[in-house]
Figure 1 (cartoon, helix red, strand yellow):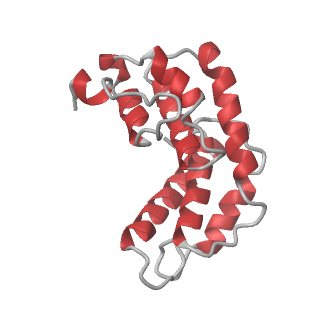
Figure 2 (cartoon, one colour):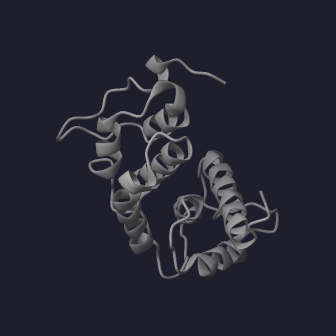
Length: 178
């Protein structure tokens, strides 16, 4: 699939004091960077003002950077300090114990695990976090917390992130697994 540059690498990077851009903008730019480019200002954004203390924005920043590296748009040497900082932020934000009160708690926990594994970071507790996710899988195979009036999308996303985290962990644990 090819997407025009105007759809992937022409989004406006927020200025100082403005709200962050949608988390998927840098991810889309990274997915298509081999064809449409990876802008220096995008690199500065994902390594700086996009960050949110280890939440969804930081997770998406690391995901985008890993994709940009994978697609040959940024070198390992140029991105290593940012990757390390983003990973440290995500690791520090991960709760010591997964004790969710909402499905979004599970979702963010799983998203951190997934992106840390996907980016091949040195996350020392990755195995513990995978075990915690497995312990939270429900009888129907999904992940989440039964909360009245919670949007179904939260459960779908948490399940997708948890399954992806397990796949990335397995890829790291057994390198012969694609």
